[in-house]
Length: 351
Image (cartoon, rainbow, N blue to C red; front, side, top):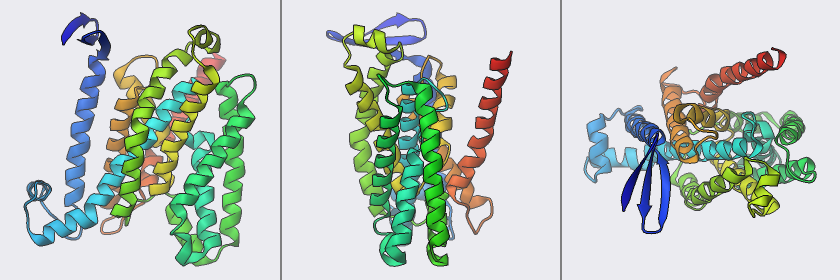
């Protein structure tokens, strides 16, 4: 293995295979990963029974008292892991959709994918009843996201996929799904409305290992596919004609990218509800921190995990001993950025 000098990058060569690794992205990713792990340890120690960080590390290393192990490993660790995985999944999904559409507004939130998941979950809660509805909520969210994404893709496809048309169709479908969700809430009883509203705000409260395992398994499969899809997007970003000239099967590649992005968003929403603006905000932050022409998928995943675990910790501290839904905190962070982005584009258009 040898390393070759290249401005801003390190080129690693192993036999006939070589690849350029951006130094800036490595530094940002390493710092973000350290910050995410630090916040995760701090979050594990917060609660009605406070545990110092040193004791948290002891328990994670196989030591600690029996009470500490039960509290951390059975009650708190699933929630923290869920926060990390949900943030990573949403951020990767946003990085893929924004690069695919060549539009910073093209995130699963804006495109209506999370709206489909929300409609499916609310339908399961309202139509399935209090006892049986919550059992099928994750599956219903997955089905809703898949149906909405398929509908958006079919409506937006016209001799190829245009990013601007994709955003417009997604906004329209999202509004329809939002109306459907509101109608379901109006006809539901108060108990179902309360449970559905908590889920719709995006919450990590009460997460268990049953929520973590399918999410982790899905990411084991989807994360490598997301990296592979990002490689295909390097060609797609130069335009459809160039991609065809380079031998890329355009429709197959586009469908694969959309499928991976939708799957990532769907599994995240099914685990924690629609945690807003993570998929929209994080890839743009990663792009500005790392530079380049497109959001980096891996760094976006790390920053997404950092944002959600940090927001979940803050949500538990702001009005302690009560807690806010994590989706409310991420919306408070992401909404001003959306307004700033829209205003900036408006000024550039009218200048």
